[in-house]
Image (cartoon, rainbow, N blue to C red):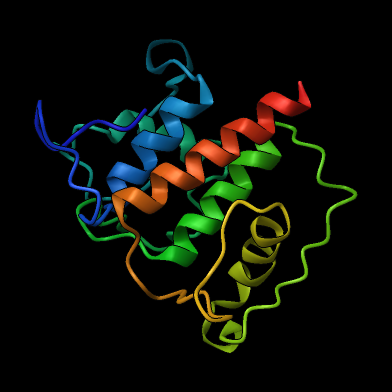
Length: 163
């Protein structure tokens, strides 16, 4: 689900881009680009981008709503709050039962979060998928490859437990 930066290097402190996040979530979802692709995404900057079809499929399922506007900017580093939003939407799309889980966000920096990400971050916090440092989440911080690896592992484990 997560490729290295080369055949022998993972680069755990490297930043994850928006396009890479889409590819990671797409691979985790089990969707098939040949079966599920119905047409291009609405983003205008995906010509020549290797993951354009994956983005289009995820956009159709509503997972890319956090990236509003005409451009996705697939090479732009993804923020921690953008990742949380996409991951929460993914969990709901995979039908994880979250009805008994609070989406109470207790991070002390939630005033720095986009309004549409506060509950998603709270949900992932309550599920134990993510945590912060010293009570803060750092929503505008860039996501590292090590962080997405941990988040994806815990997410998949939760989905497997539900089955």
